[in-house]
Length: 389
Image (tube, rainbow, N blue to C red; front, top):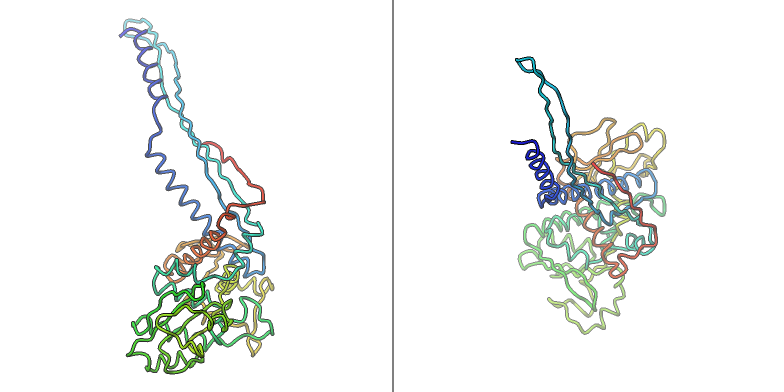
């Protein structure tokens, strides 16, 4: 093969490489990788905000609005000459060519600080039954999650007077609320109570119906006693506090199936819901703060009637636990490093993982309810080119 032919072949190969496509495989891999990074960033941000509230610090939200990946595929060719001796004492000249390909990916990630007034309002706005209805497909576990952390009160039963600080400086008695929650949960799981969403005067509520076998059972009577309902009631209508004007409900011509005692409204129970922000505040009690930070008074500890730190484990131990460690943990679902400590949720803790996942979904729903204004943002968009690799 002549030298000129060799040059032509190498040049053609180089051109073919330079014209080749990166291909769908690379794009699909990057979509998965970027998706994982976004999910991890959102999870760590939520965990950090839970820990921030434990330490009495304001939360901070940054949203990744877009990722633009820019790919570059270029060809290179290098040449080198050399001399080599042969057995007859002669010298042979040689010329070596080395074609190559250079690939780079220079993604651009855009961030938006979520400090727009409308977005903050949505985070502070109580959860609605409309939002709950969208997550009902998660089954009984979702209602357990809502009962534990989403409801501030059900009827006369208080799930904590506040998410963090108690107005009259006394810690509420959660015993009755937890009793109601456990008994009602048992009735639903055993199929003795069925639940479904209803519409009352254009507002979404929840209807619970006791079947004939359960309506007079000890558990059913206990539930109705705790809610101050007649023991013979077959139905309970849970309505948000915004609908606690009973005259409005009495005057509506819309029927509730099965029919409620419309004359006295004895089956109606009003519910106060927490907002996303107050749920985060409430779950901040699940953080196991290092003893060194407690001794340094970095956190505010609520006291019980005896003046001892109030133990929230009986309320939140089966809902969510955030552990702390001075060394990087291994059994990890999500983790973050703050205040010189690692805070994390265990991969093996299914209850905590479920609670965390439901809170993320509720946040997505709450922010999505801005409708046409959901993309409105007065804060600057920060675009950071991450460079090639």
